[in-house]
Length: 231
Image 1 (spheres, one colour):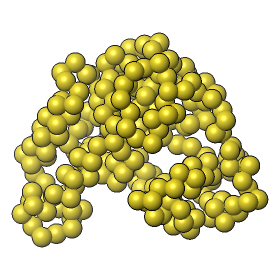
Image 2 (image 1 turned 120 degrees about the vertical axis):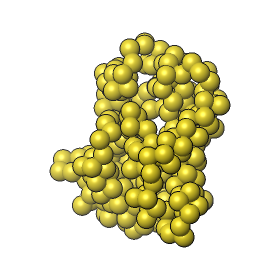
Image 3 (image 1 turned 90 degrees about the vertical axis):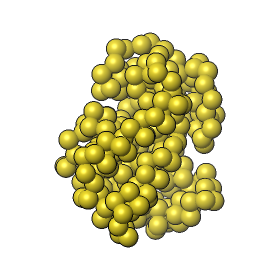
């Protein structure tokens, strides 16, 4: 998604930034109370929130410059902090990328993320997915900031349609460069650096079925999380 967006002339793709996570972790020092960060959020005054937002924006501008109208931070863990981010940036748009959970699980499992222990443990992985879905349901119910959902399978089946809806959700005019994202020359330092150089393809859709009998322990815990008819 970031590469599609960053192909638009008004968008800067910033990669996976840790700044939102660090801002959250710094909240006890910000409010001057020895509390867990989550318990500090209700103590934030409008002045504090504006200060946090200004500092964050200055950091983003140092990466993107002054021309970018939209800046994308694609760190997966950002979903933990959408409440704080919504307070800091009430005009933001959050983008939720969805995929068949079995394909997502297989992707994590095969990638061998050594720094992410839960990604190689089926039960732990299912627990993380479950809590992600639960938290996103909560954010949808309580946040005033729009959450635009994009399904990977929809992007594969209709790239331009999905890209047009995504660009419209950001309040931007359509640019055909978005469907030529694999031609966009920009540094990518995350695990998707090879995929973003290729045109969209369907090889990874329902890929889990090829491993259904070899890895039942990976897919079984996800059965109750998939909506009826998925996959």
